[in-house]
Structures are given as structure tokens and as C-alpha cells.
Image (cartoon, rainbow, N blue to C red; front, side, top):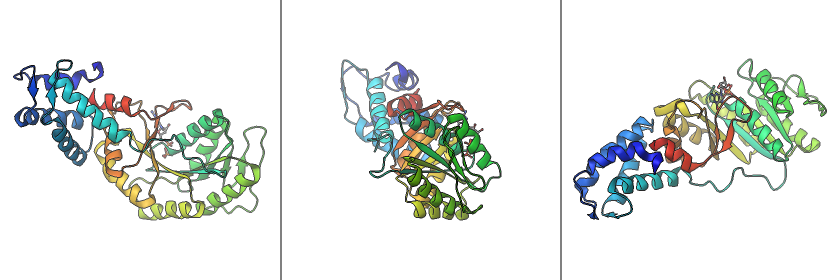
Length: 314
Ligand code: GDP
């Protein structure tokens, strides 16, 4: 329980009066709920999520038998931890949903700056390392440098990139071309990339889509058009862990907008305590699949709900 020292300390005060045995009463619990709420808000969990979450904790904690092995504070922290890992781990029975018939199509969506392009490289690198033959696709034609950025990322990862103007950039030995490609139509870029993947036997296609500064209906429609054209096996919503209270609004908008299948939490190497993870998982019910932890290609891992729960409660 060392990881929860901070919340345990807070709760210990609230339980000072409690005898070593007996059931936790409503009065006992209400004092502690305030501390739990503060801990979650400190971790940047969105307010509406904190409310529903503490409601559930309260219900579970009420009547809990105080055991000899754990003091009351530890016992409540355990309940909080269990609830947290439950919400954070929901639906995680897979790192990725691979298609029965390749290529597996993975589309990335999220706000501009969330870390999509960086993630495309990491994911490509990770898949390649696992024996796959990924292709990165530059369907972000909104930001002037996005295509070049993906090409740089692909080169670093040693993964080929399908881009509108120049066709495919080679990773050294694997030269492929994209004849008849129309510049400027991300839906066509995405569609053509799938045809190419089938032809050249790339088994995974990772499509980088345009980000937006705020939730933007035109770009959301564009993401939907790409989705409908290629029918991805995974739509990964990339969200900056530092986004804090705004996580709920953004996640809801993308959930309604493109109905994503999984979440990638980026920039977990920063100061963020990870509240965004709980916010997004709670309001969308979608699994968090990966965590991005830096700018390097290897700063990427399969998401661990228990580690995140500890981080939020620390
Ligand atoms: P996009 O607009 O969603 O494609 O976002 P980018 O991939 O361009 O990332 C925006 C910025 O965040 C870039 O400067 C990246 O280097 C940086 N970045 C992306 N992922 C991470 C991460 O996990 N940790 C850190 N520290 N920086 C990241």
C-alpha cells in the first residue's frame, strides 16, 4: 500500500476516532469522501466524474467491516483503488483488435498537438518489432507540416509512409509508389493506402488524421468520412494526459463524432497525475489501450490500469 501513502495519510486523520473494529458508519465515510474528492481533483479528474465516482465509493465503503490486517484508512483506499482499476481496466482484453483478413486498419483521431503523429511512429515501430509489416498513412492534410512530420517519424521508425504528393516514402529497400493519387483529399489518400497495403502485403495500416485546435465539426466530418471509407478495425483517440478538466468535453465530442474504439493517453512523462485517464474511461466506457511516455520511439507501452490507479492516488 506504499503507493497510496498520500491518500492513506489524509484518510487516517478522518478515521482517527475509529476503534480498531466494527463497521464503517455513514459519519465515518462522509469525512473521508471529502478527502477522496480532494485527492481526485488534485489528480485532475473532471468534477462530474469525481462526483459519480465518490458516490460509488461511498456506497461500497458504507458498512465495510474494519479488519485487523488493514486499518480503516487503508481499507477505504483499497476500495478506491479497486474502483479505479475497475474503471480504468474496463474492456482491456486486447492490446489491439487485429483484422482476420489483413490489413488491420488503425485510424488515429484527436486534437491537434495531442500526439497522433508521434504515436503513429511509435505504434509502427512497436508493430514492426512484433513482426508486423505496418504502413503509415499521412491523411492529415490540414496542417502544412503534418505530412513531412509523419515522413520524418516513419524514417526514424523504419516504417514506410504513404503520403499524398510523393507517394510512398521508402524506408530504404521497400520502394512503393502511389500512382494517380490526388493531393488534398484525405479520404482518397486513406482509401488508396488500403488498396496499396493489400497489393504490397502490408498487414497493418496506421492512418494519421487531421487534428483540430478545438472540437471542429468540419474536421470531425472529415474524420467520419475517412472512417466510413476504410472501416477501421480500431479508431484510437489520442488524448494529452495534461488536458485535465477539459478531458471530458473533448472525449465526449470524439466519442460522438467518430465513435472511437480505444484510447491512447499521451504525454504521461509530464507532471500530469493522470486524472484524464479516469475522466475519459468513465464518460466513454472505452478501454485505454496504450500510454505514450515521451518523444522517443520507444516511449510507449501497453496501458496498465493498476499503475495508473497508483499514480492518481499517489
Ligand atoms: P499531433 O498534432 O496530434 O499529431 O501531435 P504531435 O505528434 O505532433 O505531437 C505534438 C507535440 O507533442 C510534439 O512536439 C511531440 O514531440 C510531443 N509529444 C507527443 N507525444 C509525447 C509524449 O508522450 N510525451 C512528450 N513529452 N511529448 C510528446
